[in-house]
Image (cartoon, rainbow, N blue to C red; front, side, top):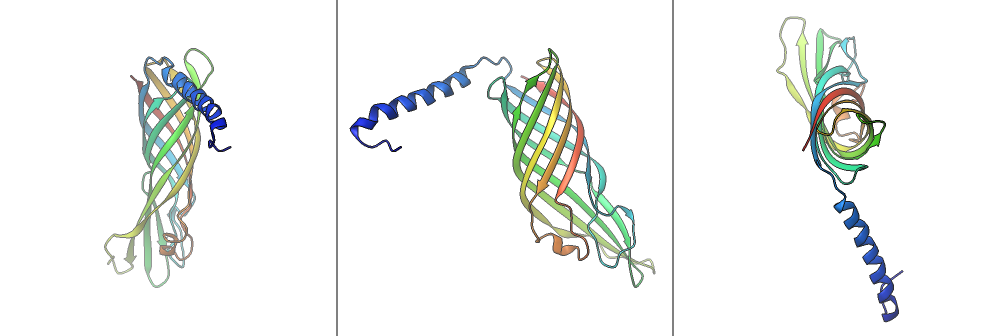
Amino acid sequence: MPCGGKQMAPRCAAILSLLFACASAVAAESISMPWYVQAGLAVSHQSGLSGREWVVYPSAPGGTTLGWEVVAGRHLSRLLSLEVEVSSTGIMKATEPSRYGMTFVEEIRNRVALLDLRLRLRLGSVVTVEPLVGFGVLRQTGWSTTEYDDGSSTDRQEQGASTAPCLSGGVDLRIGNERLAIVPTFRVRKAFHGENFAENYWYSPPSETHVAVGLQGRLSF
């Protein structure tokens, strides 16, 4: 309903006052350690070729790798927090023998930057379940080398990088006290980079989804 006219002014003023009061109540909620950082390692999996597999054309690699994750956030209330999350998979690699004495060595890596909203559900004095959702960007970079039966090879060349919107969802299990905790993590990340990166792989494009399971440490202050 528009806020025009003299008769609407008191109603709009009341609504704005109520919204301001709610926002002030959230901001004024006492949180002794409003900031936190957490970091650790994560095992990521993405579908695709791994190891050694015969192909006709170069195919996108996949597999399971060890990567890292870093988070910095602030509590908005005792139930919600807002944070920035940055992570990287390791380099996934596939060796792909092909026709005419060629072997394609294909590599790929994902790096993600997200803005997350985290919900905290306390189960006890030291255990909290924390579902979260995030939105950001995923940068997927690939490299390719062609080896020949005569022992020669091409230089390792970047296949190009694709930066695309990314959605993320997952859950953390926080175990510890208010200042220090260990945090097992689970994430599913989905990118939407379209065809601009897939054209480097004639037979099988890169997967847009990867799953990560990790273990982090958290410090609040």
